[in-house]
Every structure is written in structure tokens, then in C-alpha cells.
Length: 238
Image (tube, rainbow, N blue to C red; front, side):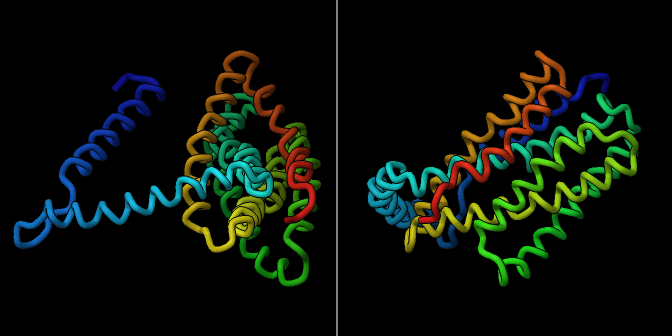
């Protein structure tokens, strides 16, 4: 229609907001015309649970053993989902590869990450999760700069596959550690991770603003600090 990609995303966001608002206003109809009573009965237990969870959430946020995992999940995501979001643009705009190669790179990244997830099940039977986290962070600290610097299509894709497999365990291990820091309080862990995810949404914005001000290559180069931070933040296991 002649618009840019930003306009397309804004249109999709507007459509999504309208659909969400319509679903919110419509609610779930109940048979027999007792919709209001059913909604009241459904909401009361939720509000009671929310009042009970409030102090639990406050205590969890004051405990570094929980807060550090929340922080680390969002930091690690910069080199997982955020990097994936900018990958095709980097390959076309900075590395000057074709859109077809960029699409292939996305497929390679997703496939290697899936393989890394599958391998993690076997690895955790032999090695502790913090050891896996630190080893994968060390590997990513070497592989990510190599991906940015190595020339040629085949070497870039090979390094990208290794990097994707190395960072695959991060989210799973960190989420497990978050739940482990809140034994018997999985609802609190879900609430905190959801709230942290909203704050973590500023990550793509920060990278985008850095790319606008300094260029995409420098913006993505800053993500090389992520694997350095991953093994430093946890400290000792709780």
C-alpha cells in the first residue's frame, strides 16, 4: 500500500488492540442467562488470591536470590529474542547479504536453538545447571564477536548455529532457578516473570534507538557485554 514497515507494524498493533478490547468487553457468555452471577463468582476468588499474593510479591522482590534471576532473564534475552529480532536486518543492511540468505539464517538460528534445547536434557543429567550456564556464557562470549567479524556466508551461518545452540539453555535454566528460589509459590514466580517481561520490552527499543543514533553494527556490538554479565550476576547458588 506504499507505507513503510513501521506503519505496517502500527496497523497490526491497532488491529490487535481492537480485537483484545472486543474480547474484553464481550466476556464469556454463560448458558441460562446467568452471565453476571458467573462473572462475580469467578472474580471473587481471583481478587482474594491477588490480595494474598501482594505481600508475597513484595517479599520476593526484596530477596536478592529471586531478584537476580529476574534481572538475568531479561539481560540474557538481549542475546536471544532481541538479537533474533534484529538478525535479518543486520545481515541485509550491515553484512550486505541477500534477503534469501537472511531468511536462511533465521531458519538456521531457530533450528540450532531447538537442537540446543534437546541437548540440554541430556547434558543436565551429567552436569549441574549453573555449570551449563557459565560454560554456555563463555562460549557465547567468543562466538558472538566471531559472528559479527567473520566474513563470508558459510562461516557466518556456521558460527550463528553454534551461538544459537550455546544460548539455547539460558532461558530454561534461568526460569528453573527463578522457580527454585520461590518453592511452593509458582504463582508469584509467574507474576514476577510476566511483570519483568513487560519491563524487558524496553530492550528492543534500546537497541533500536542505539542503532538509530550510532548505526546497527555498533548497537549489536554492545550486546557482546551480555555473555559477560550472565556468569557474573548469579553469584552463589541459593
